[in-house]
Length: 262
Image 1 (tube, rainbow, N blue to C red):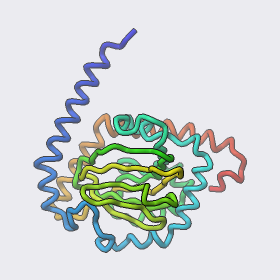
Image 2 (cartoon, rainbow, N blue to C red):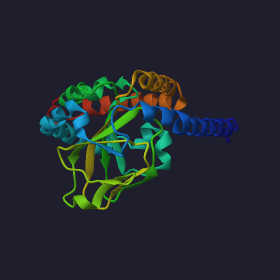
Image 3 (cartoon, helix red, strand yellow):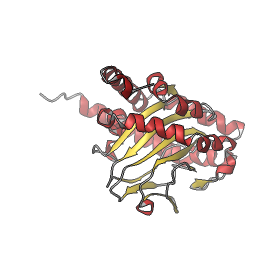
């Protein structure tokens, strides 16, 4: 029998999301844009983030930790299994994730499995979210956009197909073609889409952190993030991540000792 309470709840949640996005992309986005201490361009130069070099220096170690988890690829969650709201842009099993931090909450299990990656992320001021983002061959992510100008997003290229020109992200009027070991910063409030038109996997370390802003901008952004962390969007993702970690902990406990040296 259908649970008749679910549809009204779903409609209310969608209505709240739409109203919130409209507000964030209007008045608040404009204010945060004016408060930014770095360019508001789709792609932001690495020179604005002096700690970025540490990721290039530690690329090999981070890549090794990614590879260790890719050995357990079948046990990794699809993105929408952690964050159900992403089902709209990724309803299939071609986008896998391995979350190290979500909405400011650190995954002690996953960071313990990837200690060098965790140490590099510790250098990022006001880190909000971090995960390995793994796209299967042929995966397309349609045009979408983030909701807050208060964050900057970064990708560290870890696994890039040899035919790199056919694996890219369009962000605003810029095309990003990843390179292994290179870090790229961008503003995900610009419409962006991803295309992996190759027969190889693409993997990056994706992380979001607080945009350098004036004091007023930081205050508004932090209030927004505080509110977001109290929504179903955030609570559902955190609950799903905890449940997946319990399954993954059990999974790796039954693997041969040499398979997970961490």
